[in-house]
Every structure is written in C-alpha cells, then in structure tokens.
Length: 147
Image (cartoon, rainbow, N blue to C red; front, side):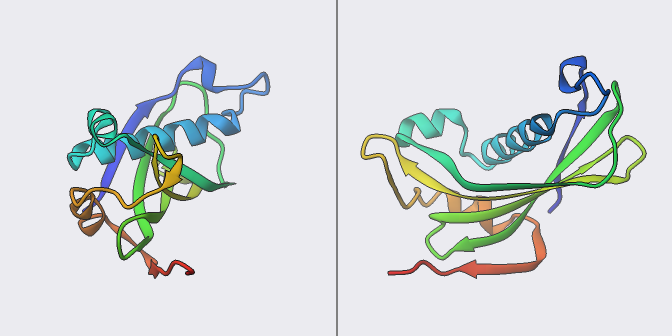
C-alpha cells in the first residue's frame, strides 16, 4: 500500500542559490516516517508509553532533479528491509517535484532504542502491522542480526 504525503515547500527550505537545502529533503522524509508510524498506531504518544524512539544509523541522500521555491513535493515511504523481530529497518523515501519527476532518494537504516536503558530494543508487537503492510522496494530483504 503506497503511503505518501504532499507538502508545500516554504521559503526557509531554500538556500541563497534557490536550491532546496539538502537537510530540508531529510526533514520531509523524517516527517513522512513519523506520520506513517502514527497511521499504524505507533504515534509519538506510543513512543512515550513504551519509552522508546526511532534512531538512525545511516542516512544517504541522492539528489536527482531540482525543486523550486513554492513547489508542492510528494514524499513516499517504502520498506527495503526489516529484521524478524522488527528491531531494525531500512526505509527508502522518494521525493518527487511538482511535475512528478523523481528529485531525490533518501535511504535510512534505523532501529528502536529503549530511552531508559539507552540500548537497542525489540519494539512492541504493535509495530508488526506497520512493517507487514508497508509497500516494499523491489530489493526488499530480511535483515539478519549478527550475534
């Protein structure tokens, strides 16, 4: 199932060269992740309830086409991989400009952290649905953790 959000870009997203700031792309991707989690019953309130939060190990952005000031952009989310216990995940975001052209690809590798212990943790079972029904990338794979 495709999950995407349309955002109107704003003046503060752009640098003096009228290019969208590289960090703005990543901020929109993060917003889509949080909205996706919330849509699947894992909102910020759930993070607090379970005392955990998402963390990123890596974030890689490839820039393909320019986005102009004031354009609406569309950002989606796709699952590239997940561990059997949902502890770790790889997510890909595609950013499209107003003309529908692929403008950037953002790949993140993350996990869940217990905020009291400051250690990685297995999330509650409610996250299963979130990953089970996510749109998968063509190269989706199970993430195997080293012991």
